[in-house]
Length: 257
Image 1 (cartoon, one colour):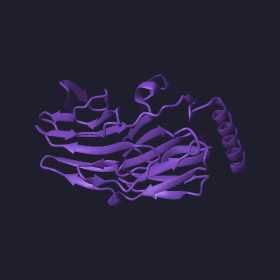
Image 2: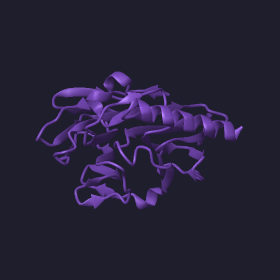
Image 3: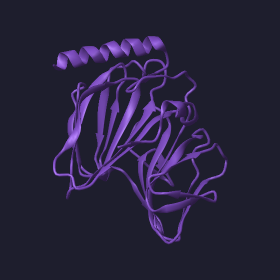
């Protein structure tokens, strides 16, 4: 697993606090983590090869097929365990975390939502296909009701082609991540497994390809006007909320034993 956002990046990438890419080949058995806790975040899980079994203390127990999406709103504290099952010896999945807005949502009871792939719109253009995971793209709207304004797109671009998108003006923070291929953004080349941080601009995002097709993710959102207090697994707007949520998670872990 490769992590691309670290605590030092939180201010620049607000409201995004984690982007992880998990990929492995020649896998013989299922792999995952036992019960552990989170709070103060929305965690979006997106398997693209293999299946993901998710179980949490909010009562969710689901198995996601490739292309499905799971959103875990951790609120004042949740524990969960996830297990990835390979397909033809391969597993690949992405995880995105955003901060919950300060106030009632940040310390609300935890909950989970599962979205089947066939409910997520695909926008097919001449040389591109865009899957709208959250937000909207050229008239297609995701059914996901999210806690804060973000756009999360899974994009495939053919060789020697161009893809463009004009985000909402308020969604001024974000990044592009290449899963495969090579692309060019504002004259800069991005290779597979590289992240490019976006700067606030009134211009549309424009991505071009050369002789190699590419698959990438475009993620943009509206920054939150609040403080960040972070641990390895949680983010809150105050030390008091972090302390309360940490105790809630410990209680849930003790009850699980």
